[in-house]
Image (cartoon, rainbow, N blue to C red; front, side):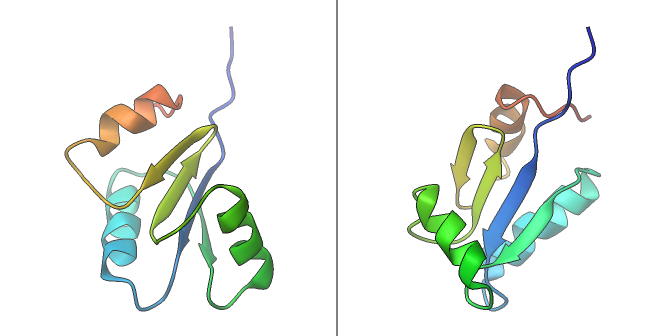
Length: 86
């Protein structure tokens, strides 16, 4: 059975330190994601709010919504969403 990995979207802002840390962590793990700036893009802000976003960063992986940046819990949350990485 060949399952497709979930789509991953990082909602953040340019001035957010935790957003930059999360982006760097994802890049280090070689996890593909799309970055959306909720201050610069009205559609991104609308999607962010639709996902229940209150604060950035918000990472949406499939149906899993991960608020904030906590590297201790992030791997388990991403695996739960179906993301396969080392």
